[in-house]
Length: 226
Ligand code: 5RP
View 1 (cartoon, rainbow, N blue to C red):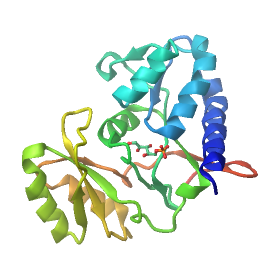
View 2: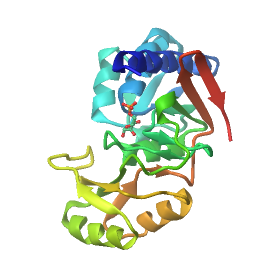
View 3: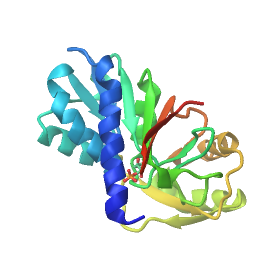
View 4: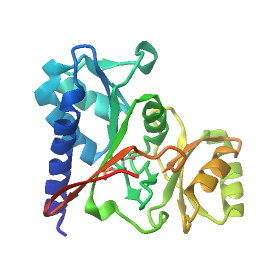
């Protein structure tokens, strides 16, 4: 698939997500918004219905800028009681709708906002579907002083952590991208990584996968629930 075709699929699924959430929008509704190129298309489509809801909570500075550029109000999560829905992309999705996220390094805020929303809708093009998670390197956000110590513990779990050079997360931390893991049990690995002191969060969404997956294909957008 050419990148132009893939981008067209991302546009399609972003627009479909807005059609899907349209029925949930009310004057005081707040929407959770993810990060990445697929989510950018969702943001652009969401702008067309911005009069129907109050505002958003955003998972990154990049998404906040795009949202504000469209005149959409961005709230702090601390100032919001309820998120009607969270919409975001993914780097890999398996058959149980478990995800690897964090290619853009925003997975910590993404995981926090997803956990606060009544529903999590994941939007992908078909290239993100995999039988087993792990070909895409798993991002792990670490406190900078703990980076090497965490990396040694990850080697102990069977992974090959590579420092993402020059990248600083919106939280002021660093990223280790973990290569070479065939992730047969995402929930156990997510817990094991969470238990390493110095890890802020990892990009596995196995414990709390999305409730709905929208997949863009050349013949239309497919819907999957677990
Ligand atoms: C950012 C993410 C993104 O959702 C993920 O990287 C997918 O991005 P894209 O839609 O550009 O393929 O987790 O941290």
